[in-house]
Length: 105
Ligand SMILES: [Zn+2]
Image 1 (spheres, protein in one colour):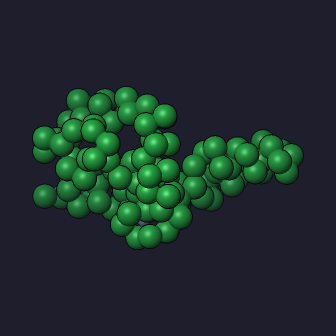
Image 2 (cartoon, protein in one colour):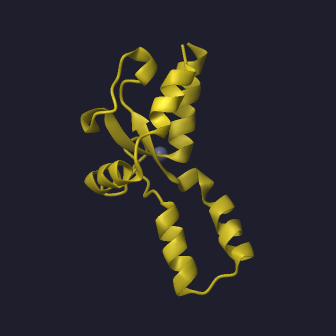
Image 3 (cartoon, protein in one colour):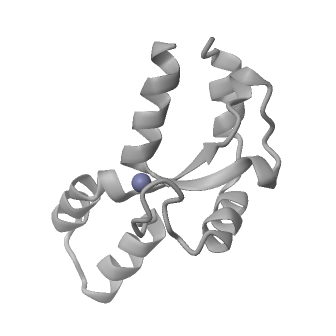
């Protein structure tokens, strides 16, 4: 059962924790091996290259699939925790695929 509580708990994983996990996994999706992109990466490039807001949002939208997310190895809804050892780096596309699979069960 995907619960509101689980979702709420996921949302409280702090940014600093996320960066710690992404750093530990070298910004590589642990499912497909692709390099993930964070909002910070895009923001840095945007400021370096003086992008307009339009360009910035266009790039944000076009890189959604590669966006860095955090996945629970054992989902919270199945008793997993928010401990670092239960959290791994996943790209947005793998994370949503995995989510769907659990959802169908
Ligand atoms: Zn992936």
